[in-house]
Length: 218
Image (cartoon, rainbow, N blue to C red; front, side, top):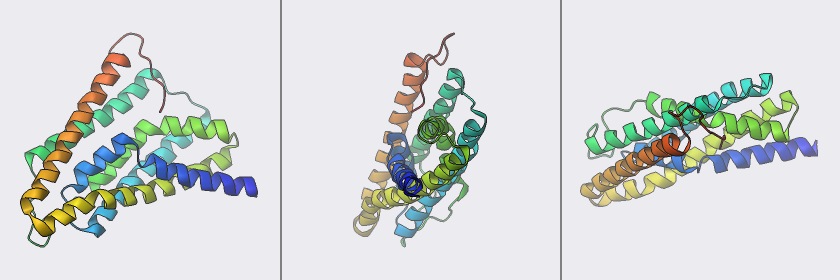
């Protein structure tokens, strides 16, 4: 019982930590930079975490159940998808978007956006999570339970991260609208730059386009 409880606590804490990975923070920063309410920011984080957790449970669970090893090129392509998404988010913020009302709400909010982005991130990280779980918990049933707890921790972590990130934007909305625009543009530039660096890393050092790619889940 004690070992099961320890595994559950560890899974939740690692899920919280997983939410603070650089690519995750950059992605949600680009999204919540448009928001000016704490509730919307937290909801975005929850949707991102739900999408991420669903993918990790589905793909990571399949890897655990069937003991499948992802080929290096497939792993690189999944991470390259994250890079492309970050670049797209950056361009989207730099280009502009839905207008903001004086009350701090955009005229439109697509709930699918953070859900899809979280799903893409989950695809890229599911292999690493599955390998970690298999190394620590060889029993399939307990490994699946760990994935569920890990997902709950990720959702909670992303909600916390998005609220913290949205705080400067909410502060700006009470002061100067121009400052809020600067935050959005800075978030867009950060997402674009990080995505380009990640894509370069995967192509040059990972050998995505080479005959013998090298990749290790992380």
